[in-house]
Structures are given as structure tokens and as C-alpha cells.
Image (cartoon, rainbow, N blue to C red):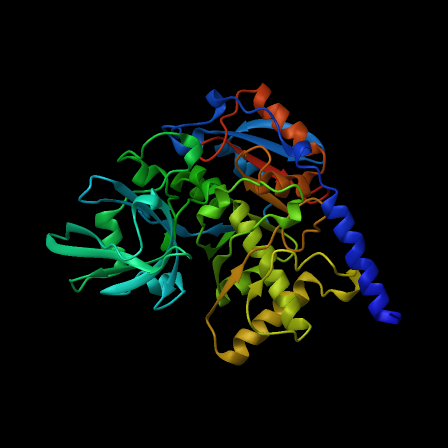
Length: 423
């Protein structure tokens, strides 16, 4: 081995040693059950807000977020909308089978298009009580959809892969069907049944594109009142779509965190967003970890275009790591490569897949800060926060626990700046 090959081998070995040395126990903390917010605040924007800036912490209310943002900030929101993706079927034996929709497979994998499919489709699902539902058995439900009687039949398309075929006998869309059939799938750590109010409170006020099975919960704090105050200050916003999957709740169960399976999630970016990012490339602030992961994935797609590797948007979980800094384009160059590709192909939007895994050692490319809630101990999202803050993530979480902050999806908020990025 010689020259460039030797350098790449050494680089790969170095980052792997660093990544595999991550001790997951160092990223856990004691979270009492009573600190998990089981319900949202009655008024969304009256939640608490912790601001971390250059090692200093300030405690505020979420409505104060406007005063904490420089006027040139571009806020980037994930406008996905949670669908009622959990459904129950009762067999003649009395056994109840639960399906949780994860991702469409046929006739399309594009989630926005899958919502409009009629008569039949195939989805990957999580299956509750699968041992009671054997291959070859068909489940049936008779339901009313917009006052129209509909018979739904559900069977295995692929038993081993948990691919489920759903067929219905009316000229209605899949979205119409699931809205009549299913319920909002609350995170398992809430440990309660879904209630009618959750269909409103577990959605952001700007939710637009149906397809998520979990909400981008950092956005739950935003209200028309907050948006109005942001507008008056001249702070701009832009939107992307990442359809959040159930994988966001999957705990890390492996000793080497790099071996954790990151579920691929679908992302959609418009040409308008790319222009917004180019105008504010040094002042981008994502709302939520899903927006952050999307934006960082976008940068790496630009790298692939810049390097002429491929025009396919598919970011593998460890793609960002084994790079020399001098080999990489700037954030602006990456975005310009994407804009050029979209213009050349006549595209107004791009749809991609990402399983990017952000953990300590990652260098952020587009994002200068993040608005986010408080996450589960030992989770991929704690690793993401630690990548942002270093060991100060412990300081932030200790402060939150000591000051009665509410945790997880319906909990309170934080504004975290990369050091030196808040001016």
C-alpha cells in the first residue's frame, strides 16, 4: 500500500478507533419517570427554555426565544405531519394484531405519493402479537371513510421482512383510509394510551406533509404568537420535510455505537430552501434534531455531487467520518453543487434517503445551533447533543433536572449554540 491509499487507510483506522472508543454509559443519566412530560403544556409557548451559549446557561420562557436570536438567523423547520399510523385488527379467535406503519414499499417509496395511492399498497410495519398472525392469514376490517362503507383486507406480502399488503374496495386514497382507521402513535415512553386531544397537540402548528409516525417535537413550542414576533424582528424561516420514523425511539443495544442500526428516513428539499440556505449559509439554525440531521445530510449530498460520486441522494450512516478536511467543499460550495444539479435536471425539489449517524467527533457543516427538547438517556439523540456541546451536555441536562424542566416529546425546550456561533 502506498501514497494516497496509505493515507486513506490511516484516516479510516483513526476515526474508527475514536468512534469505537465511545462508552455509551458515559451518555446516560438518571431520568425519573415523574420528569417525563406525559401531556403538553396547556399553552405551547409557555414552556421553559434553557439557552446555552459559550458555556453559559440562562433560564427563560419559550416566548423569549425571539430575543435570543440574531436578526440574520434563518430558522429551518421540518413540516412533516404525523399520520394515524397505528391500527388494530381483531381475529375471529379474539387475538388482537397491532400494525404500526413504518415506510411504504409499493407501488412507491416516496411517502408524499404513497399517501395518494388508491385500492392497494405495501408497507413495512412493526407487528404487535405477530406470533398470533400466521403467513397466509388475512385480516379484515369494515370501516366508514367519509361516510362510505369500506372493507379493508390486510395480508403478508413478505412475512420475514414484515411487508404488509393493504387492499380496500373503495375509490379513496390511502391517507383517507388511515385517517379513518388508525390512531396517532405516541412515543412508547409516555406509557399511556392515545387520547383524542393528541391528534392536535402532537402536531406542530405548521405541519403540512403527511407521512411521519413521530412528531418533530422541538417544533411543538412554536405558536402563531411566536411566529409573529419572529417576523416583526425580521428573522426568516424556511421548511424541509423529513418523515420521522419509529427508529427515532430505538435504543442503542450494541457495545460499539457504530454498529447501531440507523433506520433510513426520507427527506424532501425544495429549490426555495436551497436558495434560503445560500443567502444565510453562516446563520442557519434548525428547529429539532430531524431538521439538523436533514441539513447535515444535505451538505453531504452536495459533497457527493461536488466529488462527482453520484447524483443519487442516499447518505449512509457513517459517510461523513473518514474524510480529510482539505478534501471537502465549503458549505456554500456544497449548496451550490446541489443548486446546479437541480437546475440542470429541471427539479423544483429533491427527494432523498438518509441514515446519517451524528455522534461525538462529528463536525457540523451547516448548523450553528439547534432548538431541541431533552432526550432519552443513552440514545442516538443524546450522542447528537454531545457532538454539539462536548462534555457540557452533562451540564445542560443537570441544570434541566435541577430546575424542574419537563423531558422528552411533550417536555420543555433548549436553545443550544455551537461555541462562538451565537453572535
